[in-house]
Length: 79
Image (tube, one colour):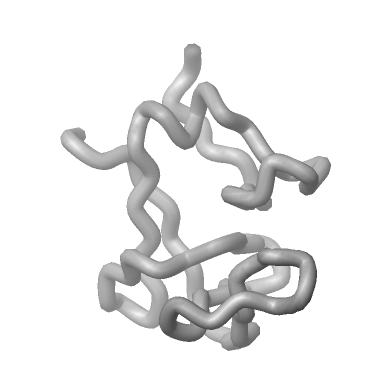
C-alpha cells in the first residue's frame, strides 16, 4: 500500500469515504497545527474536519459532530 493518504476519509463504515484497511494502520490529523484525536471525517481539499462532540449520539446511534474549517494535514502514525 502506498503512503499517499486520501483527500477525504471517514471512520463511519456506512460512508463511501470509509477505508478500514487504512484506518487500521493508524491515521493522525493535524488541524490548524494541533493534533486532534476525535476526528470522525476530514477533507483536505475543502479544508474541514468533523469532530465528535463528547459521547453524545443522535437517534441513529451515530456520534454528534461539529464541522470546523481550517488547514488539515493527515499523516500515518508511527512514521
